[in-house]
Amino acid sequence: MRIDIISAVPPLLESPLNESLIKRARDNGIVEIVIHNLRDYGLGKYHQIDDDPFGGGAGMVLRVEPIFELIRKLQSERTYDEIIFLTPDGKTFMQSDANELSLKNNLLMLCGRYKGIDERIRQTFITKEISIGDYVLTGGELPALVVIDAIVRLLPGTIHDSESAMLDSFQTGLLDSPLYTRPAEFEGMKVPEILQSGDHEKIRIWRNEEATKRTKERRPDLLE
Ligand code: ADE
Image 1 (tube, rainbow, N blue to C red):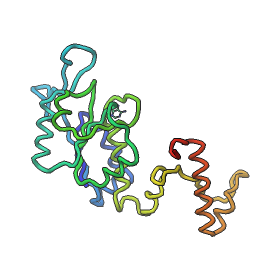
Image 2 (cartoon, rainbow, N blue to C red; image 1 turned 90 degrees about the vertical axis):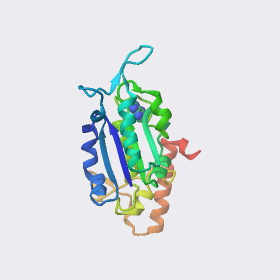
Image 3 (cartoon, rainbow, N blue to C red; image 1 turned 120 degrees about the horizontal axis):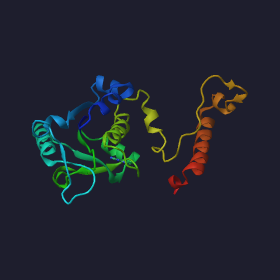
Image 4 (cartoon, rainbow, N blue to C red; image 1 turned 120 degrees about the vertical axis):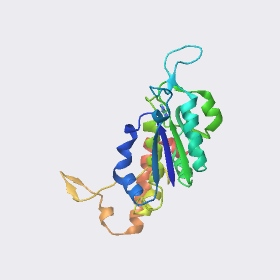
């Protein structure tokens, strides 16, 4: 898979994409991630990328020309399965969206800044608008990272234990059951005996019961 990201603030993206599992997936050729600095396509001496909104009002709007030029250049090099705009007025991102996007070959993500982007960019290029929740952030970079993280960990080879991603909270429709590791007793708190019994069938049933209990308590909406 290849993911291109357009951002006016690339440093916001760089460190999270160069650590841990995502770094390993990139190093192993499982995903290629390329960050494009929108400023490089800015207008004039000052590389302007934004301007005042027509009709007045607070905040700046990302201009059409730099984004049109960059997206057209990228489109001349490959075909994108989706061109995604991260925006609070998009559809709320869910595990099912991560699953769907993890099957694509080429994704292009556009991170907004300021008040928003010129509507003509949306009309011309954007195939999917994603929000990561009902709150407003300073830009689309953190949401892009959230979406990329959720996708990349699903790509075969990223997580060694391939079962682990399949059994995640939300994939099974349930939250996870409680987890324990050594020591078996700590400050008087004991690990449930069944987990130390070695009886895999009993453990499976216990985990399922605990997961159901937890989901009922915390997220009854998931059971509906
Ligand atoms: N940009 C600003 N806030 C956002 C959000 N909640 N989701 C996606 N993109 C955004």
